[in-house]
Image 1 (cartoon, rainbow, N blue to C red):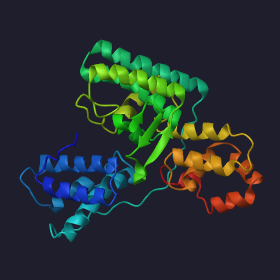
Image 2 (tube, rainbow, N blue to C red; image 1 turned 60 degrees about the horizontal axis):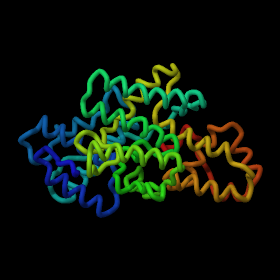
Image 3 (tube, rainbow, N blue to C red; image 1 turned 90 degrees about the vertical axis):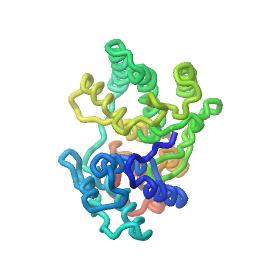
Image 4 (cartoon, rainbow, N blue to C red; image 1 turned 45 degrees about the horizontal axis):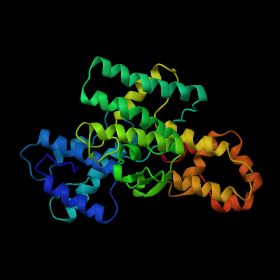
Length: 328
């Protein structure tokens, strides 16, 4: 279901979105942030049908966000203002997009016991919430979140990729997911483990009884994709009961990469195929993004280099440190 824009700038937003989609330069995060900006304009400037400088106060960095968070939020507005300038809709200057900041966060390395506790935590956390308040939201969470977190764990999907999934993207007969909305706009496929396919089938059957003919695979009560902080909020509550160490639900992605890498056998001539497969299944455009995970596995990069030094260097030249690479 297409989300409508609320402000009087709606016709301008809609034309901008169509042009970006036609150029294959649109993503779910862009869509989310443009709607956040639209809501701001609708609430603060309900009668304005043209851009003004005061609207761009929304682009100021907030005390609760870092430079990268602000950058992701502001980029779509800056692109919209540039588009509006070219069309003669406005003469205001685009907001300044903050420079990318080096990533210093090191993803949490989950232990096997922590993964088990995480699954159990999600299974019981949402059930407790339903007992206290049997709203449609709570009932949906009770079904969706345990499956959602297991899907992230077993596939290494980005959290937004799973959140934006539609039923038509999930082939439960062949056990394949089509990722059509992703970071960087890259479409790719993810192969499911048979046990995950079976779980998704069971989940889909239960959801069909609650929301027949739903569009989204993990819908909110209105059959829209959940808001960006949906799973993060519940993860923090569950994780707080498990450990005091910092961790994010997104760290399941790095856990997937590291677990795959550490299981590799017979390093040498097979390394190219394994690298390419892992990189593509995770939706990376370049192998350098996948290489960043090697630094999370002690001595692994050195072992790979010792097996195929020349070909490895030709595949991955001048690679950055993990801490300086962009978010994967």
